[in-house]
Picture 1 (cartoon, helix red, strand yellow):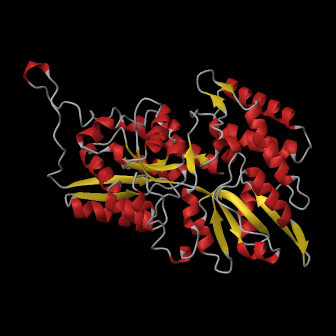
Picture 2 (cartoon, helix red, strand yellow; picture 1 turned 90 degrees about the horizontal axis):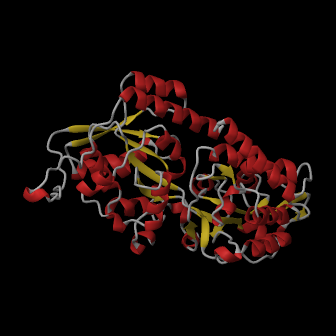
Picture 3 (cartoon, helix red, strand yellow; picture 1 turned 180 degrees about the vertical axis):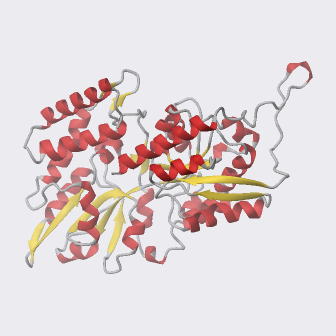
Length: 441
């Protein structure tokens, strides 16, 4: 359902581009040349007249209150002439068509760094680096790995968006289960083998209840620690039938071969952990907002497990980004909005409210979660024990290829008892067939 919804969004964005026609000239262009042909440095941009900047927020990123807190209010305070208008960017195609029909094209778009390639291929993205330079936005303040990931998702040549917060990975654990069985809490520097050994001690029946030791979530997440992609963007061939992917399959096979801890779909793990309270450890991405609503769950976090060769590396970069759209008529104002969003003041507020700042600022990281009472006493330092792994080069086939790989381990390996080598070979063949038909859906 999620891939379908994303596909709808991409189709609508493509429609927006077609209807909007050619984008305006970059705000940084046409600055003029000095005598003698030397290019003049464009002065810092200004917005002297009132302007309304239209902001579209892809589903599940920021709600209206968060947009007000992190964007609208800080922008209004620093730039009174700029007003933020939130467009109804609904997660269904009909609403987006209505948006286009009304001529409500956004100046700014909030989305994920991991789903920018389709925007680029339909021509929706644009090079915003000249605009950032014109606005004197100091990119050296931002984590360079984050910028590299966004640049890769933009096509590898330029930035089409700026990151403003980062997802994270952690090992969540149920303290009650570990206390019940007298098992020590997970440590921050565990490998997947360490976590698997701990899971064996936690997988048991008690009082008629079957407790599970560990769930590693969807397989593409630990695979990203090893930099594993699905399709080579240069050859347009599948790249999942190899020793590294085999290593990840074998890691999950060890976990789900523990008696009493059989394979369960990644999407069911959160319920087992937070609702059923039968899962002792859950290695995944940020789930804190969901866990906050479960008042009778005693949980904490440890560092995300790693492979021996990826010590200190969690899942790959998964960033929330703000892009200036190709059709924007207010690129100067849009650039200033981005500059406010990545300012020290707003980034500190973002950190205090449980989102990872993208700035190279340790003092801001230390403020993480201070405004959230449910994080009091939690080992939040665990989320900083691992850094994101570098992203693989994206392709338009990744969404469907990811599903094929997940099906290979869930259906073939665990349901049909197909050996791992065969499962990977068949997944490789299926992805190549997908590419040959030219279908990315």
